[in-house]
Amino acid sequence: MAVEEARKKIIIDTDPGIDDAMAIFLALQSPELDVIGLTTIYGNVYTTLATRNALHLLEIAGRTDIPVAEGSHITITKGTKLRIADFVHGSDGLGNQNFEPPSGKPIGQSAASFLVEQAKLYPGQVTVVALGPLTNIALAIQLDDTFVKNVGQIILLGGAFAVNGNVNPASEANIFGDPDAADMVFTSGANILAIGINVTHQVILTDADRDRMAKSGGKLAQYLCKILDVYFAYHHDAYNIKGVYLHDPTTILAAVNPSLFTFAEGVVRVQTVGISRGLTLFYNKQKRFAEVTEWSDKPSVKVAVTVDAAAINELLMERLMHS
Image (cartoon, rainbow, N blue to C red):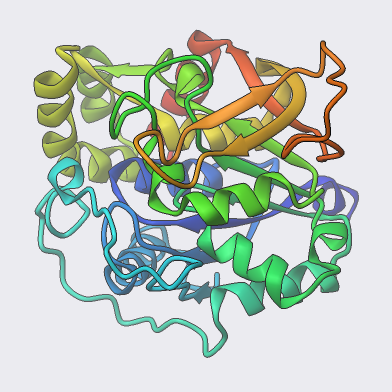
C-alpha cells in the first residue's frame, strides 16, 4: 500500500498527436505515476479525433480501465477558428495509419468537470499534465473557484521563453491555440510548472534512437516506430535535424523526476492580441516597478530553464523498449 500512496496521481490533458502517444505510453510505463484519467483537447487534431485517439492508445497499451473525458471543441472566448497541426502528425493525428476505431467510449462528463471532480476527490494530490492548449484547465478554473487550491500541481507544455516560437517567431503552438485560456491559467494562483520549447528543443530522439527502438522487443516501441515516419519527415523538413523534438514526453518526465530540470520563478503573462498574440513573457521580479501594471500582484509560477536532455532520452528509451 505504501508504494501505491507514493505514486503520483496524474491526469493527462492531451491532443494525440504522435508525441502525445509517446508521452501517454511513457506515463503508463512509469512506476512513479498513477494515470487516473485522460482529458482531450484540440491542437494536433480536432477534439473529437483527440478523444478517439486517446481511447485507441489506451487500448493499444491494454489500459482501457482509465477514463477518457472529452474536452472543449472551442477556445475559452468561444473561438471556432482553431489551429490544427495535422501537417505535423498526419490527418489522423497518428502518422496516417488509419487504425480501426476504438471500442471504448468517453465518459459522460466533460473534461473540465472531470478535472474539478478529481481534484476535489484527492485534494492536493492530483497533478494535471497539460500537453495541448489550456482551454480545459481554464474551464475548470471558471467552473469551480476551489479548483486552483484543490489541484496539486499543473505541469504544462507551453511557451517559448526567450526563444522564437514554433507557430511564428512570437508564439509556441499550445499557447497560440488559446492565449486567453493560457493567461487565465498562468495568473490563477495554481501551483504551475511550465515546460517551454526553450527546454524541449534540447531533447531530441534521433534517427539512430528510432532504429534502436525498432530493434527492441517492446510492444509500445514497435507501435511508435510505425507512427513516427510522418513526424520525422516533418522535422527533417522544417528544422533540418535528424530526429524529432520530445516536447510531450519531456513534460511527462517533469512529473516523474523534476530534478532533471532547473527552474526560475516569476510572473508569466500571455499576449492575447496583435502580431505577438500567444507570446509568453516572464517577469523575473528582479526589479520592483513603482507603477501599478498588468503584472502587479500576480502569482508566481515556475518556468523550466535547463534540462538534462541525455537523462530524459535514456529514461524514455529504456521505458518504451521494455514495454
